[in-house]
Length: 384
Image (cartoon, rainbow, N blue to C red; front, side, top):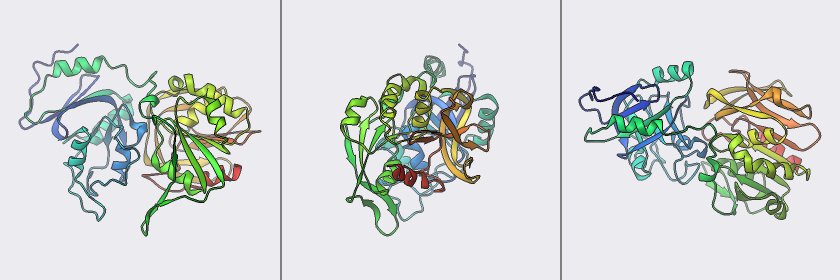
């Protein structure tokens, strides 16, 4: 272990970011006075920082925001994807911007403190992004102490003891504790969120870390939505008599979560029930079909990712958040590749040739991001 005893804290520094390659970056603390470790990744979105911080797929990750002005719309109780933030921390270039939005109810710094979430500002986030791009996503630890007291050796020892995301099943930490019914529909400026009370189809959504806006999109199709925990057995799901089964997004290694989820998915597919998967759900569906997944060099995270629909030739601008991918060459002949990334050619979608089963790697519900891909929820409803 390196000896940090000779490292000098710059005057007025109240936060530090340590990376596993022994890089030590000093800055100014925001949020709670605490320390958090995780995989350091970058997100290129220009909007939606509150949705990003509460996305369960960010469990175990520290987010480096490439957009410099974070905090300008404040926070509220509506723009959240889960009740508690899943991200471990955040890295910013500039101090938090004061809120200037009619929907803001709280300053971002106060919101971070309420949720025991910490961050660091004053970091060259674009230089850090370039390092992640070239060398991969490093493990790191953020520590905030407003009196400037840091034990770097102890922090680095804690960092070294963390095994990282590969091989980690994180879905159990973010899934719902018990089944429940979801009725909230998409937001509109005129009325806010609506309520779905006229349903003729029943979707059972397996919650591996589901974003709320995905559930809103499902409810907005006109379906009754029942959400069940990630570990729910196939017999319990089938007993609910679903017209369709949805496999949600979520954090961690799909191979690890797949140890208990893949047998469930296989049993559901045998019944010829329509299945739709997103992100982690897409990856585990691929495994259930005989494919394999792997950890990506740096992952895809942002709201500006171009994806080509190979069936129509159209290009969709998509919202993405994933650090693992489906190995396309591992998919069997019974599977058709439907979408591909125009950034790096990685797999972004598939469908089964003779069954009503499909999935995508990206996030058609957006939140944040463009709504180019909302049609996929209607496609799922049509299959039912």
